[in-house]
Image (cartoon, rainbow, N blue to C red; front, side):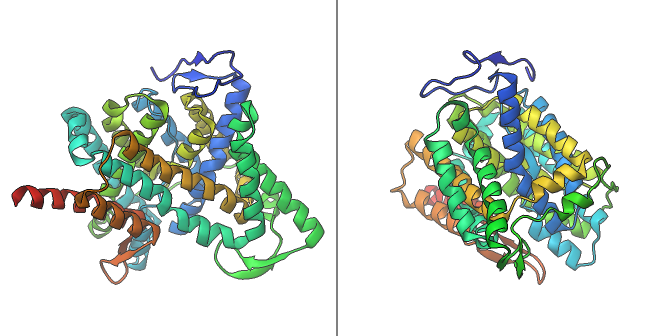
Amino acid sequence: MAFGWKLHGDGKHLAPGEVVKPGERLSWPRMIGFGAQHVIAMFGATFVFPLVMGLDANLAVMMSGVATILFLLIVQGKVPSYVGSSASFVGAVVAIRAAGGDSATVTGALLVVGVVLALAGLAIHRLGVGVIHRVFPPIVTGGVVMLIGFGMAYVAADVYWPQDPWVALLTMAASFVFIGIFRGFLGRIGVLLGLVFGFMLSWAWDLIGGPITAPGGDGKVTEHLRINLDAVARADWIGLPELHGPVFEVSAVLVCLPVVIALIAENVGHVKAVGEMTGADVDRYMGRAVMADGVGTVVATSVGGSATTTYAENIGVMAATRVYSTAAYYIAAVIAILFGLCPKFGALVAAIPGGVLGGVTTILYGMIGLLGAKIWIENKVNLADPANMVPVGAGIICAIGPVAFPITGTFSLGGITLGTIVLLLGYHVLRAVRRAM
């Protein structure tokens, strides 16, 4: 069932070791708080990646809400996850635009990838989860989860943290307290509290100390206030994002197709991580999850939005809160749709200073990476075996670097995508050679 949540306990408290399962919920006011927290967690990346790819960020946010609802319906409410803008396509889109492609060409290529991904998910669902277990055994899924988390470290370290190191450090320290020490409801919305703390700290610092000279989101060093609400003042209260249809070009599609491998591995890793956290067997929903990701991408790109994928940031929020209720994701999806239709609110969330995001994402990305280690521990993976250790280690370093491998003069595979391919192919090639010897 996709709807209908059982009240967990008294709807207010969680006993030590307990979790709120996907089919459960706390009181509705609390669930709205968790939904808002998920929106904050996904918003930065879901807003930024379309901007980097030259697409409408407000449309991407709105369609991420639509795609999330589709995802939850297709997986029948068994896999809690938010579906936001995918970073895996950034390199390919840069290559398409460098070759003269416009936004319609970009979204056309992404739509085709979504179709291929949906068909791959359907095949996994029909053939059974055994296919996944053979292609993605615990050593691979744990490694993929780890490189997804640690592979995002450069975003925190190179993009967000340098914008305001002191605010980042203090926000991270405050989040430690909110997440690790606070009990009850306050502890479970620790990520949101950390963001609010960082926002208020930045505002106070602007009043007391004035502007800061530091790099902005574009990397250029300027003197500026930490919080700039000019975009909020200019934005309309209600407005429909600009829509456009896709255009299909074979060359653009071929540039994007390799990303399918990384997306499947990423989805499998996320589903495995959710299963480990909730203690539920969600393997039989893996095909549905991959298919749902593809369907979400098709729907989003068909109107000019960005390609979508399940979000590691929100898995990190679940790990911190122990609340895995899909009700929170439906609420987050509705909020995202409203944000997409209300440019002013979107601009307000987008005004969260980079230093604040640096402090919070450092925690979230690290927690995601450690979930990969948890998968290894739970499945007693033998890391003393070189056939396990070598490709996994290489893949993780490729992601963390991020290491880039040039394919053409304008396109290269790198970061999480390259790391996933190195890990997956390296593991299976070594196993095949060992069996043949």
